[in-house]
Image (cartoon, rainbow, N blue to C red; front, side):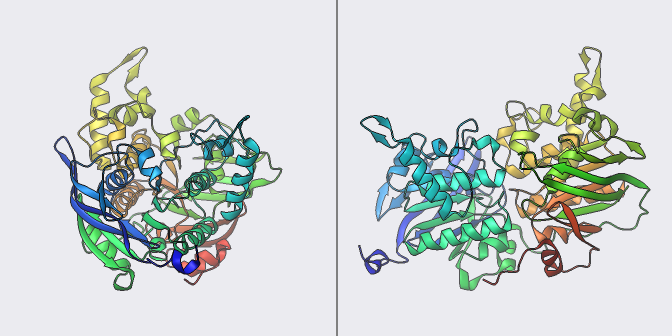
Length: 513
């Protein structure tokens, strides 16, 4: 088919939702939503956690059926009984929470359930060849035979994207595809998206990174409380327009808390060196020193691979350093276990909340009280009344939207799950809290609440260190911004720094789009 014929229907509607509603019991997740997906264009869905974005995606990709309304594909009403039916019709979805099999390699994950067969069985060599091509296309140097569990979160996301690309989808739904990617990986993904749309593929894109999404979107749809509040083409919108329709006016991520005296040094990192956990023979943290005072909020900014995660994990007792020490309130705690660090008042909120921060089979309350069991356990007996008191207090303090401590953790939105992880750690009354990308995958409203919470606790004397790969988040509540690059501190700034200065110090070029 010629390129002209390929793009002949550019911009025509390929998939449409008409009055689509979804109710779970008394909860109306979607209320009569109408929107169109255009051929060869990117339609972005904006909205806070719980606005109904993921529900709509699940309906469009056949994972769940709508309570009422209909889906129209190529002008004909259609009902998908399953996601594989939708996939057969060219609709694929890339989920935010990765659905990879960690114990299998990259190749087998990409072709799982649709292996390339010959008379002699599975053609592993052909699968490997296609996997290599996909990795080249995504500019990612990942060997097809690498077990997925050995990959960083960002690389796993790339594999998830590769899997969807391998099916030759005509409509590709991307739910937070960049939440774990570095700036350079995002650039590559955007290039892939542009290539796909040029080939006539339609993209439905969900992102909490608003500025980022604006770079590639053609149409913007805003959902709020299950209803569509606004729809416009790219030329008619800007950042303020999105935020206004998402959360109302007057919105910001806060400012550094003031009006109190900071205390003495709460945490001191002295000449810390950490070898690459993957055994690559170089140091991911290279002789780094940093001290934080009680009541101070420090933001660590850096690109993927700068060593932010490894630094925090070493300080919190997860990884081992080869040289240097960690001093908490004047006491050397280097090499302590995670449990000993928590007991001494040093806690970490990890980046991957699904894997490391929550127990999916437990209730909200049990997750919240997990780290503080010692506070209401005497010998073999746990005081349920004290535990219930702690849970209620944590739900109130951290503003978790839930039916109560007995609700399943999976029933909460991503933002509220993140608040549970933070609430769990705050319930131990720490002196120092480390947060690795605390706003990953949560919407702008939840972000503001998380930052407000941290600012409040800093005023009470808590030392806070958080990492981010979003420049805008550096310029919120941090008293100090430390930029990491290749395991070292490349610059340090006060709160009056510009975005450009931070990005330049991280080695990130400002790309014009």
